[in-house]
Image 1 (cartoon, rainbow, N blue to C red):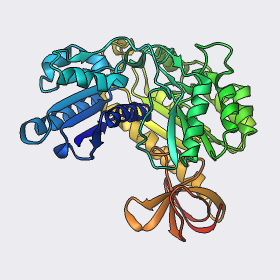
Image 2: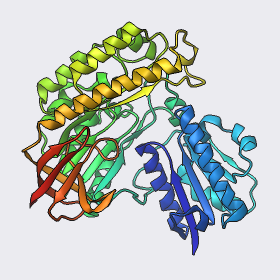
Image 3: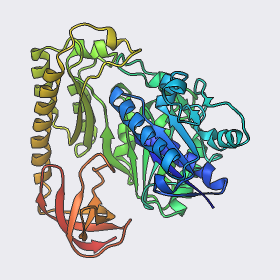
Image 4: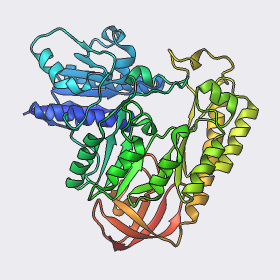
Length: 443
C-alpha cells in the first residue's frame, strides 16, 4: 500500500484542514505513517501568520525534502497559509516541492496529486479562498477519541492592522448550521464527549448568512445533541460577546463556562492603532462576570506594538492585575509585510518588547497560581485524557475550564480510569498552571 506522512503546523484550525487532507489521501488508498523516512508522499501543512511561523515551515519543508534524496519520498506537497501568503515566489525558493496548495485548495489535494502523477506540470494551486469544507468532504480526526475540534466558520471580516489572516483565509464564510449539527451528532456517535468550536472569530458566526440565529442559535441546537458533555467556544471577538450569548452559556448544561477573548491590549490609543474595539476591556470583563461569575477567561496580549510607551505598558500591567484572567498568551509584536501596522512609527526595540513580555508572563503565572490554589480540597469533574505524557504511572486530565493544548491540566496521582471518562477528582495540590488530585468516583 502507498504510504504518506502529513506534518501539520500552526493552530487548531490548520489541524482541521490537515484532517480533511488525510481523508482525501486515505480514500485514494494511502496508508498514513508518522515517519517521513517511510513515506512515498510527504505533505507539510504550513502556518504563515508570523515570520517566525514561516521560518518553522521552511525548515520542515527542507527537512522533508531530504527524504527525496536519501529516503522513499517521491512526491512532496506543501499546503496552507505560507503558500497562500507567498504564492509564486515559492516556486523558485523551494524547487524541491512538487505541489503547492493554498488555503483555497487543500480540499483538492487528491486531485492535485493525481494530476502531478499523470505528468501535468502544474505545481501551484492557489486562488482567493471562497468556500469552507463541511461534512460532504469528511476528515480523519487526529485528536484523541473523546475530543474534537469543529470549524464553524472560515476567513475573517475584521480589520486588525497587525494581521494578514483575511489575506490568507479570505472573507468570513460560515458553515450551514444544520451541517455543523450533523457533524457533531456523528462525532457523538463515534464517542466524542467534548467539542471545541473554532473559527478565526467564532462570535462572527452567521453574520454572513443572515437570519441564522448566529452563535447563540447554533449553541442552542448543539445543546440538544445526545452524548456530548462539553461544548467549548474558542477565539471570541470582544465586542461581539453580548448578553444573549452569555445567557445561553449560563443556562446551558453542556456549554462550559469558558471564553477565549483576544483582548490584545488595554490602552485606547494602542487598541485604535491595532484596529481593535476601543471599548474599555475592563468593562467587557466585568460585564461577562456579572452574568457568569465563575467563568474561566483566556486572553491573548501583544506587547511592543508601535507607539507603546513605558506608561502604556504599566497601564497594561495594571489592567492584567485587575482582570485576573485564568489563562493568557503573551506575544511580542512582529511587523508583518503587507499589514498597516508594519508602517507605523515608534516600535519599541525587540529587547524592550521581550522584557515586557517576560514581565507580563511572570505576573500571569502568579495570578494563575493564586486562582488554582482555591481548588485545593475541592472535588471537581475532570475529563481523563489518558496516561500522563511524562510517565505511565500517572494519568492526566482537564477541567471544563482548561482547553486542550493551550491551558494547564490535572495530574491524577491515584485511581484508575480510561481515556475519555468524566471522573470526580479530589484536588490535593496546585502549581503555576496545573492541579494535582486523586480519583474518587466515576460518572
